[in-house]
Length: 325
Ligand code: ASP
Image 1 (cartoon, helix red, strand yellow):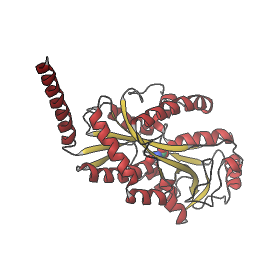
Image 2: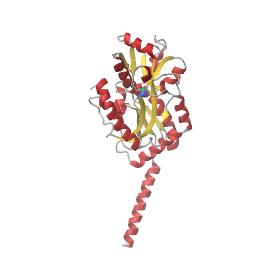
Image 3: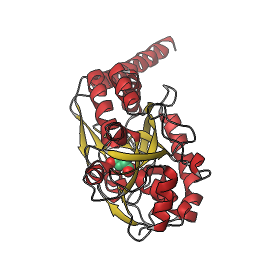
Image 4: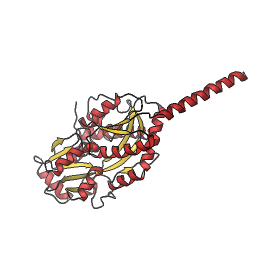
């Protein structure tokens, strides 16, 4: 009896050591962080900052791969089918929760096909226009858009992106059906806004702050319920006549379903460290991009948030809706 307890203990100990060794060995090669939008945009900016910081902690490079298109759903499909070995991770935003309401068919399931690692940020959006757009204030902009529905163009990152969601709610609130110009991300869309090829966009402060501060584009309002610290002069859309208007963008980090728990735990720890990294914190603050709390940067918090957001947006999108097959 004594002997069998001893041998059981020995087996358990070996098991623990094996688990610990497997965990210690991870990561042993480069990790790819898939980003569902083009380089130079807000999701890319968040991803690169976090990836750089995680690389330091993990002792392996976390490289960014941009795969824009179809509002983020192309990359989500690719991430869902990637090997569940911890060497592919996927950063997405609120679009991961709106896609199932916008697309009748998706090649993946946003909840079932992923292991959540943790929430990453909360980011306000801003309504901006090309530098010579003929409206100074938010009231003038709204009046101009209503009076010139046929000719105003609106840039977004495709059906399912945050810029699409914000634009859809904005147009629905104004009763205006604008000509939409889709890009693979709001990085390239911003280039066209700067060049004056497109009129309006609603995008994260991560992408708009320096252009607003540099006077290169016009900014009218933020989409959050409160004003934003880094852009204190901008009113909220809700206070500018579009009652109840609120879209905040959140990012989450995922791995393909079946990625082993010790690997997810290691990635969560690394994400949490990145969100406390002074370089990341300082750059996020300049860009009006809030890192989430340590308690939110967890699989449990992201899993719950994703489900709650899917449920929240479904009826709103059904009402305002634009759909794709
Ligand atoms: N986050 C942007 C959007 O949803 C796209 C991007 O990151 O480029 O519109």
